Amino acid sequence: MERLIENNEKIEPVCAQLLDVLDDAGGKQAVEELLQHWRELEKLQTHYAQYRTEHAIATEIDKKNQAQHQLRHAFDPFFSALHEGLKRLDKTVRQHEKQQTGQAQQEGKRTSTDRRTKALKSALEELHQDVKNAELYFQHIHWLQERFPNAAFEDVTGLCKLATPEEVKEQDYSLNPGRYVGVVIEEDGKSEEEFIEELLAMNEELSSLNSVARELEAVIAHNTRQVAGEE
Picture 1 (cartoon, rainbow, N blue to C red):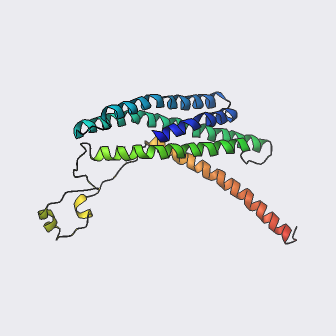
Picture 2 (spheres, rainbow, N blue to C red):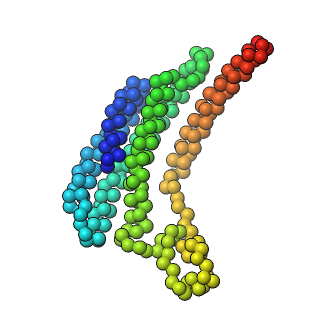
Picture 3 (tube, one colour):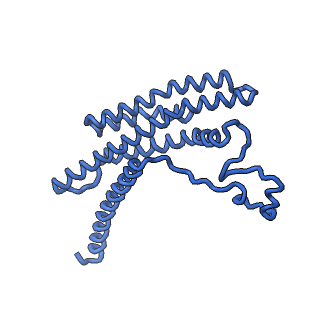
């Protein structure tokens, strides 16, 4: 919660940057949606304060565990909506940058991104990292609650198993964990459409970086020839 509150203070300046560059209807809508998501933080603060008041010092394991599950469920939609909002913003920025590139090519200018857009992308990257850092604690809690929902040890495929002496004997007394815990294949939860969209976004970014690299390569080659007196 402390990390989220810190991030919340950065939202207004970033949104101001966004609106300064993305002044079309789509950009304004994406910014408004992001702000709307962050306003939900007040409700989470209320849930968190209520939990600390009623259960932080509780000693009854089952009751406290149930309260922690309820608190985690309150955070689920917040992070899901936040990720969707950031994803739409990223897409909007990419479209804006693509339009700039197309316009520059039509005018016969260099296709490098302007300073405002570069600053905006840097601010967005920082915001992504801040959210990731804040969500790290939430992900740890989510991970634990999924595997140990009753706040007690239990066998979890691919993670842990309480092996009996008989089972150890069957494995010729080998203590290799893989012989007991098994394996599990975890999905990333992305749909085919989301995977393709992310793949295209990365390919688009790679193309942009390659374009900049080619420009730099040409400049370096030109400068080298000048230093060598070939031009």
